[in-house]
Length: 80
Image 1 (cartoon, rainbow, N blue to C red):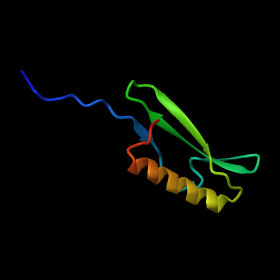
Image 2: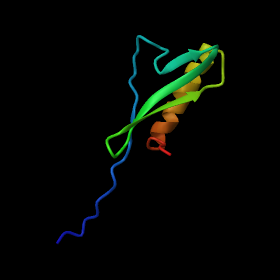
Image 3: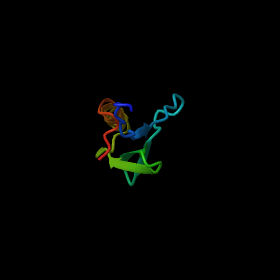
């Protein structure tokens, strides 16, 4: 009999980097920039997440998006 423990599957963050589109994962909603990304859940479902970046400046939105996505990856997806 094996004494190995089974680890629960981990959700995975779906981020696609498009070097030709610096605004990938961003959209402007009535002047305010938002980021959107997908989390693939362990139960084979997915969750689409949209977060306001609370800025009207495109350059600042890109920086905030990059910071947020880097944080999510560093935290192991950040599913809650």
